[in-house]
Length: 343
Image (cartoon, rainbow, N blue to C red; front, side):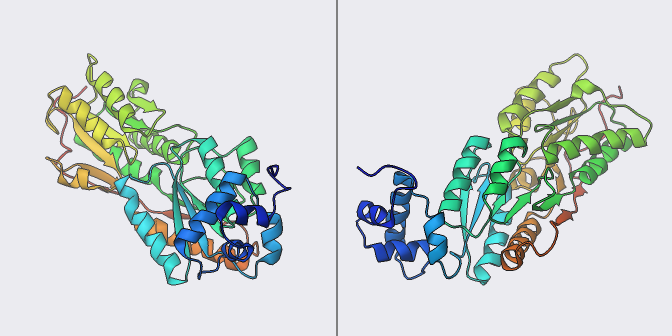
């Protein structure tokens, strides 16, 4: 029995996969002539054995694997389809493949996926905004020694990043509600330590301050981007003696939970409560009434991220880390109206 780790050889991988050592070498080198089913067998053997090809394969490699990893919290969030397609198209045009993985929003899962991509000699990685980057996790990322582009994460100064201007979008939306007469505006969003949530909170507070007003702290709920959290917080607030007159769903995947809670209270939109969503979606557009949206161009984010990653792959660390801020807009729809009562 061969021990795991550094004592494993390419011969062990070939035996486990039932292929020749030459085939394993071609897989490690990213040779496009290897049939997909053979490539999968070899990669499974690598994973099962715990073989780390970095030390050996890098000395054999004449070029890249032309593979880019993309780690998202949930690959089934509809709003991310535009991002994925745009990034795929940019990469595909120059012969790179995009491998999408689901992190479930867990740091441990992200570590596992990143290690796997590194072992398979991915040329770069794009990462979504679902766990804070600090301490051991940041050291782990830097030790991977592959280009990384962060999507909606601003915690580092060493990696390229593409950010949506969530604060500006929130300022516009909250300002519109305040101008209509709303004062009890609820915001539900993710963990404050994450860039999208932190910026939404900032924009929310700045919109109030610009009008010499202060929000009710009990109407600000941070902690999760999930639909279940949207449902729980919305239901609880609507049950208060003095409920919010408007609710902003501050996460791509939260709107369904907010709407379900409103329906469960037999309330009307916007007569009883106004609603604003974050991120363009079919649900927001086709719901009756259509839901107002704080939106940004996910396809543009994908194109920029893929382009930055390709540039970093080609040019290495020849320039400082860069960040690009993608503008947000507020689109008012029939889900927003004056408050039923001013409070």
